[in-house]
Length: 316
Image (cartoon, rainbow, N blue to C red; front, top):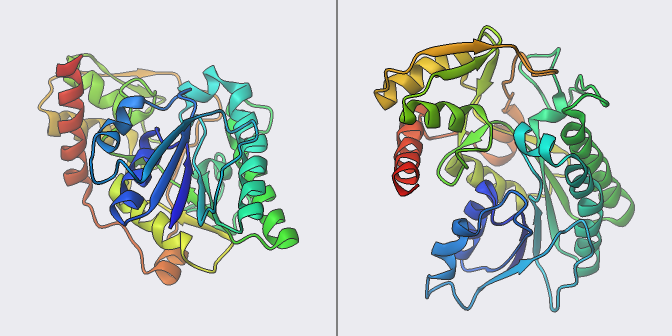
């Protein structure tokens, strides 16, 4: 099979490239490095077994892309995904969610390829339903600072469903909840790399608000398995992929301190605008449709991730 992955140099995208190469696919990775990291691909480029089946194209998918030959699968993962990144790049975030989705869907239509959109739990906004099921329409501020990401993804979902209904493109939508693991950037602004970086450097851990807000953390290997299973179904509506094991940010900070052995204190700062108070996926649909649920215990996943960040900090 021949598989194209946009955002393939990013955290999740690079793991997808690795998975599809391991399964024998020819992989075309597209990234413009606005938030992706070339180093995430070094182990793929340097692997003799993959060298003839791995192609990298540096390109902003907000502009049209032509690919020679057939394509079996297109996975659209290009987008800034952390608040630090999409607040720094608001217009590119809106463009890759709208124009980028349009361009990749057009390519899928042309090539008669399977298509999978990386959506997000952020489409639920600051939810008034808990846990969040796929039929919940969300509580999003369209003109708030986070709207550039939230509404880009909501528009991307609408366009994906329109291409399925009107053009009969074989589309899939995964709503990704907080995911973590190796190849996250220490400076991406999300809570886990923030806490781990601060703990490893002996700095205070920054908790926003009183820390009672919750998140649910899914290890990247579990997420990748769910994505691959979803791609090869005939189901077209959104599917939540995440870990329903919920924890408060305050308790999560304590957990990071414990696993890292850090003596750093916890400091509290004001809660950012429109920051969700709760976040927990209902994964009933994924269990029934895909036979999928997370397997990696959070303590084990955090240990693996901590080892990665320790190596990164030593390298820096």
